[in-house]
Image 1: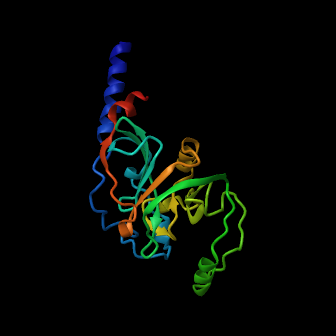
Image 2: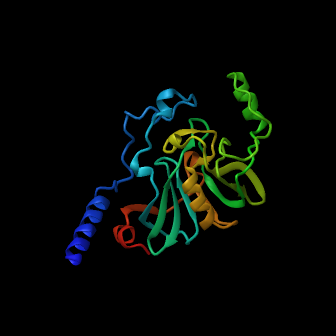
Image 3: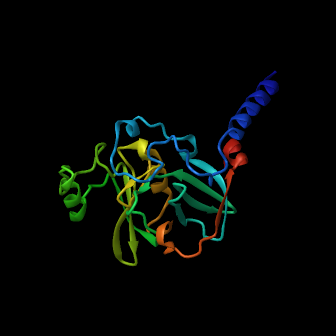
Length: 231
């Protein structure tokens, strides 16, 4: 009887996993208000948005020649991959830069901060002031901070790029083009990545301008065995 129940439970888990989305290169649906990538204006409709399941953290099969520990960010599909080696990776959903704020390149994690303070650049404060939004010079870390629970500061050599991988107090924005160039993650995911990624880790941002150069990576979908059995 116990064996029968165990087999039934395993079958149910397998069926649920098989129902998960595998293809990640399909064009976004037009029903999502912010899939147009066009606007920085947050609407009430956006704030009620449910983040699609495909942007939940997944163990995936990833074919790449990048070394374990490398982070690959696919800004077109809104996925961040932490390469684990042996055709394995952890895939996270992210939010990325809106039109005019996308970028690409090869950088590294220069420093890491828990519950970081937010210091919006002067040009951002001036830009937002034109729209009637007064931003603080400094906002201390906490649940209401736009940088969320963790921040990983992206450097080019020894120079801070001003871009970060960080959490967010707007979890509904994952999968959208709304930021000023930073890579947003929900807080649970950024805490997970923060614990796994080291200072000095290579970060490849695949995006506008192709400044990242040739990057070989192929998302082959959910890793069923690891998802079911772990490891």
